[in-house]
Length: 79
Image (cartoon, rainbow, N blue to C red; front, side, top):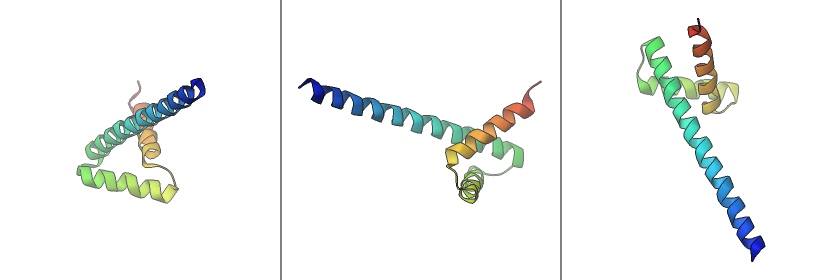
């Protein structure tokens, strides 16, 4: 009984962490799209396509590309 509950709790904890990671990735993608839209004067769809194309070309996740863009933009704006 205790083992079953532990396993269920562990599974739920993993699922919660995965959901949190997914949400953070989506937020990052939205932020990166905004950066691209402003910097390149393009639409949201074009910004997403650019992120997706870059991710495919580099064999990386879109969320990883988005985070790299956010980091680069933060470095460029530091004073």
